[in-house]
Amino acid sequence: MKLDILAFGAHPDDVELGCGATIAKEIAKGKKVGIIDLTKGELGTRGTAKTRAVESSNAADILGVSVRENLGFSDGFFINDKQHQLDIIKVIRKYKPEIVICNAIDDRHIDHGKGSKLVSDACFLSGLIKIETAVDDDVQSPWRPKQVYHYIQWKNLEPDFVVDVSEFIDIKMKAVLAYETQFYDAKSKEPETPISSKNFTDSIKYRARDLGRLVGVEYAEGFTVERYLAVDSLFNLK
Image (cartoon, rainbow, N blue to C red; front, top):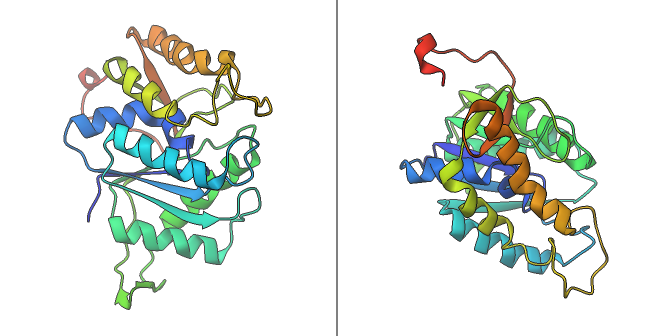
């Protein structure tokens, strides 16, 4: 199956938090989108790998993605080495996305920056003809995405561009809150974490609203780029 967009997250819920509304918008336009989680989030303070698997499946259904896979890398301890790169190269060559979206280049959680660089490096290497990969004995052809974008997470990084997601913010919130063990629940007896507070849940919407305010729309999601963006005309910009 060829996908238009392949979104990577170091943990289940990263993609929903970082670019869930953008994904929902592109799917509504008819684009095929997939999500690849690098780890099962097994080191998370709240919930378990098993509950995260159920939650991520529910979130995928809400967003309407075509496929979601988990590579099962070690939460907190995966590294940017040949084997991890090859595992990601196989996925990129399998789905042949035009665009890859991945973690923030710098963030509070160490897996986010690591995951960002790992996926970015794999996107480049995936285009090299002398790197040979196969899945189920089927030899894969080289494939390099046209663009690699990085969503913004905990840190308020300056975006290089934003996407108007005003009509899709509610779908994003529904997908995020599918992770019932991770976010605010007044009845929960689990330990408090930086993302389990009501303040954090509220911040998802008000941060998007602030980005929207800056560009004259209701809600927006921001992204950073690896190379210059190009447009055909000045009138292509909002």
